[in-house]
Image (cartoon, rainbow, N blue to C red):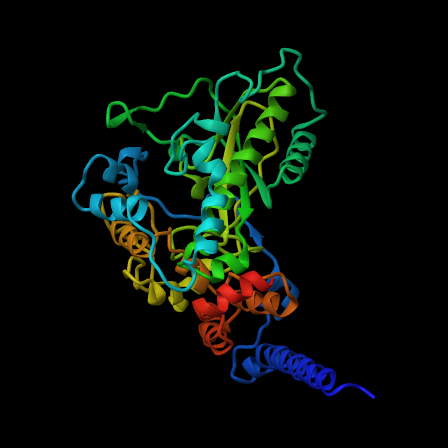
Length: 435
C-alpha cells in the first residue's frame, strides 16, 4: 500500500500538473483559436503563422531621425549630471548609490549578499564602469596584460563572412547570448566623454579609426528580474555587468591575438542601443531600450570597435513598435511614471538627458532615477512586466508571435490574465531560491 503522505503528495503533483496543462491548453486555444474567433487570429498578414514569426531584415536604419539630431555629449547622461551636482538628479543618485538598502521582501541579508557578490567584478575590478567610463578595468584599451597586445602577425580570413562567423562563435563561446555586426557609424559615438578629473566632458578621441562594431547582448536571469525591484533584480543586473566585462575582455584578446585593433566597451564611448539595432539584435521599444526576439528587453549590451573587416548584419523588425503603441504595460507599471504614455513615438525630448532628433518614446531619466533611489537598485520593473520578457517555451513563443499580427491589441489582456509580470515579490523571491 502507498502511505497516506505519499498519496497526498502524488495527488498534489497531479493537481499541479493538471493545472499547468489546463493553463497551457487554454493559452493555445485562446491565442490560436479564440483570438481568431474574435477577429484577430494569430496568423500573419498574408495568412501564414510562419511568416508572422520571422524577423524581417531592413536595408536602412529603421528609426526616423530629423535635422535636430546631433551626437550625444556624455555629460548630459543623468548619472554624470548627478556627479556634477545637478540639483534635479543629485539627491536621487546619492540615495540610489550611497543610501541604505530598503528592508522587507527581497532585501534580506542573503538577497543583499547575492547583489554584492554579483557586482564583485563590476565594482571591484572595473571600478564601477557601468555609467560609461572608457578603458577602465577589464575594458582596458591599452596594450597591457589586462588589455592584451596586438599581434604584429595579422591573420587573414578568407572573407569578411568567414571573419564574422569566427567572431560570432568566439563571442558566444566567451559568454554572449546574442551577437551581431554593425558598421562603424559616427552618429552613435559620443561627441564628448565625461572626465572625472575635470568634472566636465572632453572631446571623444578614439585611438584609431574603426571599421566595424561587434555588438553583444547578454541575457539577465529571468527569476532574478521577476523579483524586481528588489536586491535580486539588482543581482541579476550587476551579475551581467560583471560577466559582460569578462566576455568583452576575452573577445578583445582573441582579436588582438589575430593582429587586429580593438576598443572593448560597455556603456562607454557610444550609445549601445542604436548600435545593437544596426547589428540586427532587436528593435527600439517604448521603454527606450532594446527588445530582442529571444529575450525581450531582458539583456545588457556591450560592444567592441575593431578594424577587422567583417560582414555586416542588417537591422530587423518583428512588430515591436506596433505592439508598443497599444500595450503600455511598462508605462502603467513604472512607479515614478518615467515612461511615456503617448500612443505614438515623437521627436519630443523628456529631459536634458534625452538624445534629441530621434523619433522615439523618450524616457524621463530624472524620474527613472527617482525610482532607483526608492528601490536601492536599478528597479527593472519595466523589464519584468514587458510581454516580450518570456522564457523560451512554446506557448510564450506563440504569444510573442501574436505581436506581429492583428491580435496585438488584445495580447496585453492575455498577458495580464495569466499574471505575467504580476508575480508578487514574495513569490518571486521564493521562486528564485527554489529554482
